[in-house]
Image (cartoon, rainbow over all chains, first blue to last red; front, top):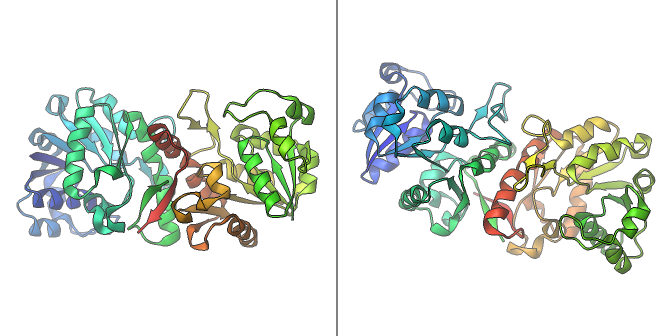
Length: 230
Length: 230
């Protein structure tokens, strides 16, 4: 399947590698292709320059956001939270009509340091997932995987024999089924994928970052996830 | 030990039974003792009238809040979130000076139905735990157990052989150690109690109610907890 990944950070790269290995055709989207290809410093998360990664993954084309979203049947939103709405606003919504947007982003605000809060207006009684769906009513936003470290997103068997919880929510049942089939290809077991309902439930999953970041701060280990036990 | 429990709902009753069974001397605090004893309807959570419970637990005295807090060396805050600050404001802070307040409450706002949000001003960049600590700087607020159903709080072995996570946070290390010893008496294993640090981390634990209530809504089962797996 043709899949566009928006964002060239560590999360976007992980998805590009994984989806390519699963024989999907992948295109990455970025603000300015030349800037992204010529940046020669690590990013704020410590990821090496994109060009280094791209040398080992040359088959993945990279295009400006507005062009990249024309390519995929499915769009993966791996942008930093604060950039999500401006980037999608800069694209032609006709190019996104009827398409599934897998939203794995979180509205993190690091302006006061670590641990981050959630962006003002995008928490508690609202969420980034909802605002994205409102911005693109013709698209099918499916929020998932946003509650864990990206290595675990694409390789759940990395910890606890794959037994831990991934939430999914969105307004379109068929779109969620399509996304679940991709999650299964990543190694997710159906019984560990919990459908919370419509996209307003992104309020719940995005808010888990407020505890996730504190667990990370207390344990100095991001390679964990929550498993619902009963 | 002398322990005061504020709140006579399902949570307060569970703690009263458990602490009594562990040979602690327990007193419960309420707004108006006669009202509480003579109410003859179930509460909004479906708990039977207090008087019914009290018949089976006559040894537990019940007093007005301000008098009840004089009794305990430790105070357990099992009040509904919106009532916490007004109730503690109505007490004499001298009666709470130097004492540990175990805060198991959450700032839930059900005014727009289920799932609730968190009370405006007590979420994301603030928390009820912090505001309680600010109100009573001479007391030692320890936030814990607020991320699960009350049956599991006092009986962790109810699910998954007791293997699931309880967070604790607060500014006073000795106070947290005292609370951990009580948690162990409830059956909590030390390795499942995660100290997140100071009381600002209540922002993380209280926010988990935004996902907890949605999991409950999706599964119709409250007898679950999160287990951090790695």
